[in-house]
Image 1 (cartoon, rainbow, N blue to C red):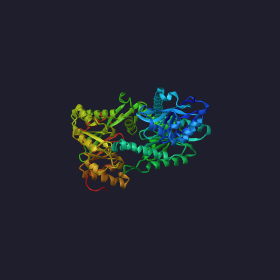
Image 2: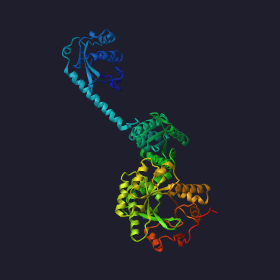
Image 3: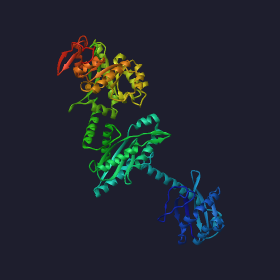
Image 4: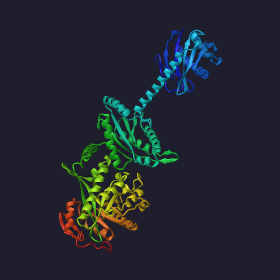
Length: 611
C-alpha cells in the first residue's frame, strides 16, 4: 500500500522544499506553504504533478466539503466529481485509490489541508478515519505558526519595522561583506550618513503619525535614487545611512550624493498637503576614512554635523580637520561633566551703561570655563557641547542661582539695586519646570524679581518647539524682565515680536562693529533702535569698542551700551572694586583702555546728526 501524508497551506506567502525541490501549491490565491513528511513507494514519485495540475480545483472542492469533524474520508477516488476527471486519471496511474483528508486550522480559520492516501479502495481506516491525522494536523499547525513567528523575528532583527529598510545591524553586516570584496578588488566604497533637517518640528506640530508617513515616503525616495548595488538603511529616528559601492572617483560620488539630496527635496503629498524636506549628508570613504564599518559610519556622522553646521540642506566630505575637531569635542565633553564638581566654572560680569545718565544700570552674567592645562575655553565651544550633552540644564541652573545670589549680596553691601542679566538656553526653556525653577531661585536668593533679566536669543524666541508667548507671559507674572539677545541675526516675525512681553532688545555686535565701515550696518542699527522705540522697548547695543560707535549710538538715542569701550567681563571681586571707586555708582564711569583707567567725565552730545 502506498501511503502519503501531505499538509498544504493555501494562503501563505512562502513555499517549502520537498525532496530537494521547491513545489508551489496554488490554492485560492495560488500561494502555498507546503510541508511534507512522507512514507511512500516508488509508485508515488509523480505526486508533485498532481499538485501542479489538479490540486487547486481538488482542494477547493474538498475544503468546502470537510465536515465539522474536520476529517473527510474518500474511500474511492471514483467518487470524485466529474470535474476532477484529470485528477482521478492521475491518481489511478499512481495507484492511489482512496484517501482521507483533514483541514488545518490556524486562529480559528482553515488555511490548508493534510491527506493520507491508499492504493486500495475502501481501506479499513476509511471507515473510521484515524484520530492521529487530526493530531498531526494540529502539530503541523503549531509548527507552521512557530516557523512564521521565527521568520518574523529574524526579519525584525535585521530590518526597520516602520520603513522595511535594513537596520543598523544588517547594514554593518552588508558593509563588512562589501569591504572584504573591495579589499580584494582594490575598489572604493562610500558611506553617507543622512539626517533630515528640522524633522523634530514636524513630529511636534503634526504628530508622530504624520512623521511616520513622511519617513516612509522619504525612505522610498532615497531607495529610488541609488544604484542597484547600493544599500540604504534606517538606523533610528530621522537618520539614514547609505553604502555606495564601487565609487570610481570623487566626481561620481558627488553626483550620487546630489541625486539623493534632490530626491529628498521633491515635494511629498500627504492628505492633500505638500511637504518639503531637506537633509544634511556627511560622507566617508573606504579605505581612507576607516577600514571597518563602525569607523566609517562614525566619520560620516562627523561630516554630517559639519554639513548641518554650515546651513543644512548640503553635504560634506569627511576631512581630517573634522575628525580632529570631533575628538577634541569628545574630550571636552568628558571634562565638562566634572567641571562643576572641580569648581572650574566661573561667572564673570560685564556692566551695562545707560547712555543718558552714564550710570551702570545692569550687569550681564557670563559663564566661563577654566581648564588647568589650557586656560579659558571659549563659550562658543563649550556652550554647544553643554546643550548637546544635556549638561546645560544643571549648568544653566547653577549660573542662574549664582548670579542672583551675587546680585543680592551687592545689594546687601549697600549698593543701589541693578538688574542682573542671565543668558537662558532654548533647551532650558523647553524644560517644563523652568518657570518653577526661576521662582524657586528668586525665593531662595531673595533678589527682587525686577532685578532679574532673562536673556533669550532671537532664535530661541522663535523656537517652534514650545509656545513662547505663553511661557514668557508666565515668566513675566513672576515680575522678571525679559530681553531678546543677538537681535537682527535671525528671521523675527514682527507679529510675534509684538505678542511677546519683551522689555529690551539687544542689538547684535556684528552691526555695532560695522557702524564704522558699512552704510548698511549703520542703517540696520538705526532701524533696530527705531523699532525698539516704536514698540516701547529699551535698546541695548553690545560689543561697543570705539568712540565712533558710541557717538553714533548716542546720537540715534540708543538707551544702553555694553562692551570693551567701558568694561571687559570681570570676576566679581574686580567688579566690586569698580563699585568702591565709584561712590555714585557709575556717575563717572571708569573706562579701561590698554590696561589703564580713565574717567569718562562727559557724556557724548545726544543732539544733532553725526558729522
